[in-house]
Image (cartoon, rainbow, N blue to C red; front, side, top):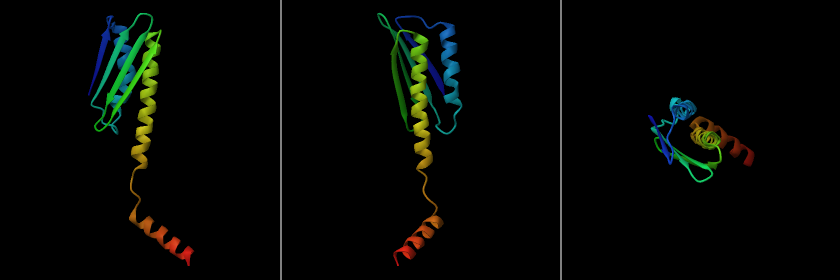
Length: 116
């Protein structure tokens, strides 16, 4: 479980590195997704910053890419996109559980009684 931070066209300062690590440690602490690595690429263009975040889980890859004039705003918007994807993935995993056989038999009996 690692966080890789890369800066293109500028240096990553300790303040930026600390902000990124503090924001992303929440995902590393999550045990349901089994996060293996997080890659953050921050790029400075002519007038704007581009932040690309890729979160690698055991069976899923969640990407987010945001452009903004402020580096911190771009990163925070990328984290918000990743959080939305993680929330949807958790809901998908949670809702995909099979129904118990005993409750299926009860429903089938109720449907058969209603049909008669």
